[in-house]
Length: 228
Image (cartoon, rainbow, N blue to C red; front, side):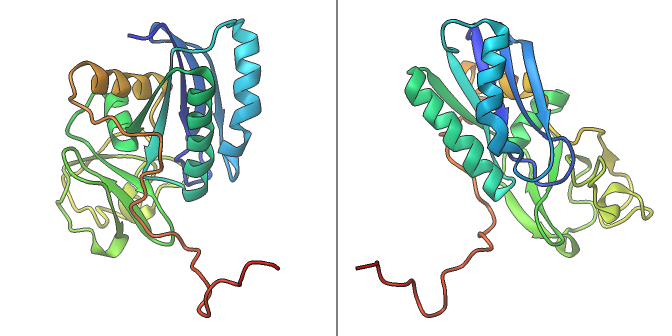
């Protein structure tokens, strides 16, 4: 287990406080900052600098762990660019973990399916042992997952049809909704350790895991020519 570690999660797509950065030493949180709202991960760099100063760490962390997605398109690009840059500058180990693996490690529940906010009535689905995907809410089949968690089913931004606010909703009856919207710093770190120790969790490069195409599209007439 690395002695000192920087953990970050910029995947949160809603208004809730799901994005965070934290310093851990021997698996214990030394300092942590939770950020919310648009542009949260764009404030990671100065926050990391301030946290390192408060912690009095003279040497850089031995490992940087970051959530790679699925999640906010911009949040992932900003947070993972920072994580990759720090790994290169500090010459330390970098580990990416999937959002679902980090949440399952947080809850210590290996069988939970994670449903997270995407955009416009869509949710990211991260089921154990499967590739993450994005589905329109209306295409979710009742009874598909007996145990669910994530910010689409719990928290201020939860979708009514998935959170049980409208009766059994889209997910159907007999679904256990665990009260966890986002992973903790310890959970993210635990998932990284699982990937390094026994391979029960897959390790990812520090690159965004996109499962939904970006909204931005090239213009119909093609890109403008380079300036002369």
